[in-house]
Image (tube, rainbow, N blue to C red; front, side):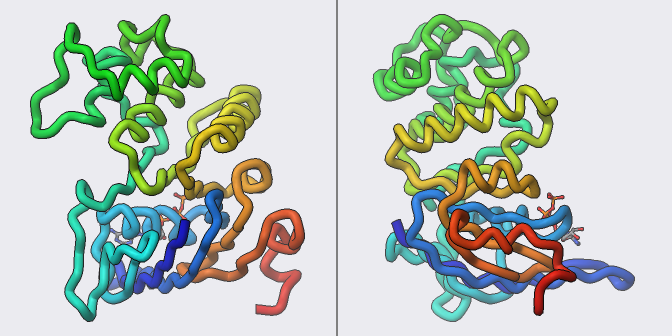
Length: 240
Ligand SMILES: Nc1ncnc2c1ncn2[C@@H]1O[C@H](COP(=O)(O)OP(=O)(O)OP(=O)(O)O)[C@@H](O)[C@H]1O
């Protein structure tokens, strides 16, 4: 896996501005963007996914250019082979687990039929142990089942990377611990690289090998998580 990201974007109104100026390279399969609320983590993720157009910059994944302002390259989100997992998983409430997962394969706007069989979707249903609840609707699922269903839907189209935006933010602390462990186990068993954003050091510890700390729109520090615990230190404790 190789990822190069340089993104500059100015946002705001007359009274309030935010300047995003992010640059990093990574060869890790487990990248974590860590930093306080409002630091620019989600904006960075959205730029990688193609949901936010930078003012300037360059984004490449495994040598494939997804965005380049100078060369005027801007690959459409659906052609980037980048999966984006939203904070609340965004499962379709009116579709069953199997239909939600098959939706990852769907071309066009038609929902997958309840009765249709999709071997590629079935593979992930089996891999994630979702067979017993394949016919259930999202409202009937536990938090862990929702997470697995959303991940399965994201993985079905065989993305080059999965981006996870604060995957546990909506959970109570006990469930958060369980889901973190579950995602950690999935990371070990899956080949697909993941980039996770979080403001929780425990998430970073469990889910990242390459940690990038984001503050005020910039990469403030970059380190392998185990070797450099100073990434967790308060900003005042370090030289900027
Ligand atoms: N469309 C916009 N116009 C102006 N400012 C924006 C816009 N979108 C985001 N911002 C600002 O950019 C900053 C970074 O936002 P971002 O969502 O990337 O933060 P974050 O690090 O992901 O925080 P959180 O953990 O709270 O999601 C915030 O201060 C936000 O208010």
